[in-house]
Image 1: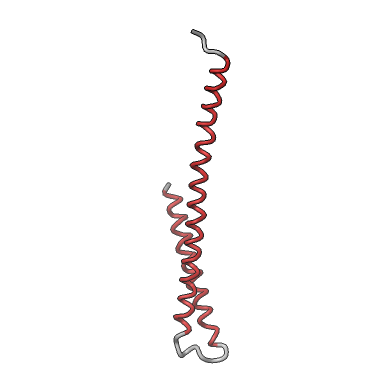
Image 2: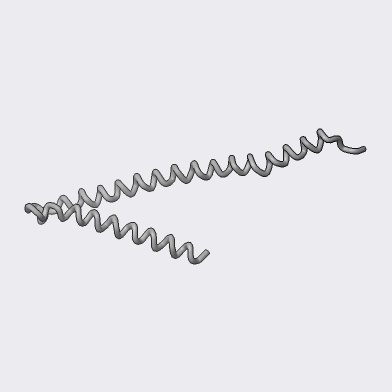
Length: 97
C-alpha cells in the first residue's frame, strides 16, 4: 500500500510543527521567566541601594553642608561594589563552562 500525497503532506506539516512551533513555545516561556526574574532582581537591587543610603543617613557625622552628600557617595560606592562582585562572578562562571 503506497501512501498518498496527502498523507505525506500531513506528515511533513506535523513534523514541521513539532520541530518549530513547540520549541518556540518553550522558548517563550523561558523568556517570560527571564524577564520576570530580571525585574525582581532589579527591584531588589534598588531596595538594597536605598537601604544603604537610608542607613548611611542615620549617622550624625554627616550633618554639615557638604558632608550631607557623603551618604549618597557611600550608597553609590556600595552599588558599584555590588555590581563588580556580580560581574566578576558571572565572568568566572562563564570561563568555567
